[in-house]
Length: 257
Length: 228
Image (tube, rainbow over all chains, first blue to last red; front, side, top):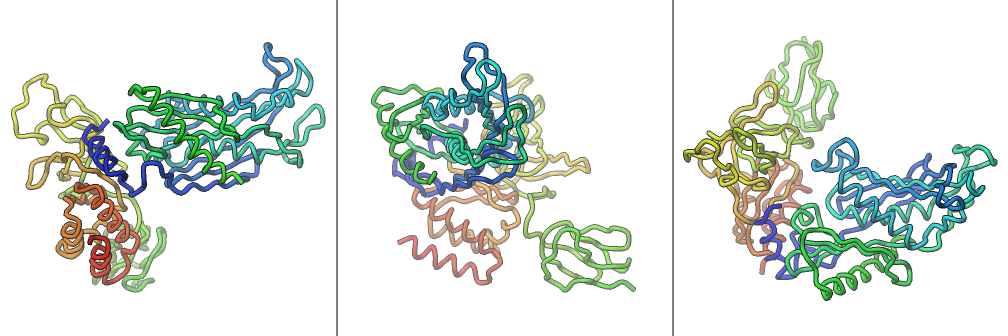
């Protein structure tokens, strides 16, 4: 962490501006595209400024876990590819990738977006498995929010592949959509000094004190949360952060269409 | 007798044959394949007598001897510092070149440069194996205190600086910011927060409109409108 950069950023934030001219509570330009790949059952590409990532949904026949024989499986995996940032290395997923995958997973799971009982084909024998894979293409900060937005956009565009009772035919997609009962959207609010900001660039993300990721469903219910960073937060801080996150999640939801 | 396939100041793409025959010599940004001279980069061709060279319009920074660049300390090694210079190769700042002070055996090297510090440094040597050596000994070479660093396309650096530094001087005068431009495309900026944004916008315009003639006047107009 570069302490001088942090001081310089706080000086700018005291005046209510950031290095790129945005206000602290302003997002960069966000674009969401769906159905970008042929082979995945659902897919989406999300760009926030220079940050770019894709998410693909694959559906397959799984054996259910022994403790939930009548429930389908949901799996979220995040790949922080070395091509997207010099910080990322090849090899098994690191701390950052695991955290991001778990937080996105938690938002989808705890909001009940996918009714896992619906995915059951034959209790104890056959269930649908839904696997979300998120790949980063370029990292200029705020991968968390981009990832969760891509995940939900991809799930919304997911169609079942043809299934004849024994084998899945991935070549033909049916028109049957994966039903979603909620659309959780995650917004991360960062705290630098005493300032709150959303959608940090890679530079700003280097020098934050603490962050909170909040996932909201459509009616503004908090469905998941995650705190990160070394700094401590008071209850008032957290309340302010949640209010800001809620305001931003409403803006992001409009992009899902 | 060889023949030239292109005109002076044509835009050429990588792999394009620029000339045939041994009468011509490949210059910067080109190479010889058999009897042909081929372009390495996207850029403007330039024919100077027998030498055919290329002025790149895109591509990463490639270190050259004597370039003054801005680097970021990435690691501290046994014998010096590893500096990231916005390029495919790492560079080494040896203890001897880092400071003129006497460094005791086993001393803590972070007292000179810490990881994450930005430094203005000069490329001393680039070996054939692409090991880059940099030095802190020379006028204007220093550790950068405060401010922010951002990157632009290194091929646009000459435009940002302008003829005899006219462009960068115009930005400095209008915004009152301290600015240092590294040949590798890293730019260091320090000033009032609101003025820094104007300076960054001006540099952004230069980067996007680098092919336009009379750009210095345009930038002066832009700065005049913004700074009031």
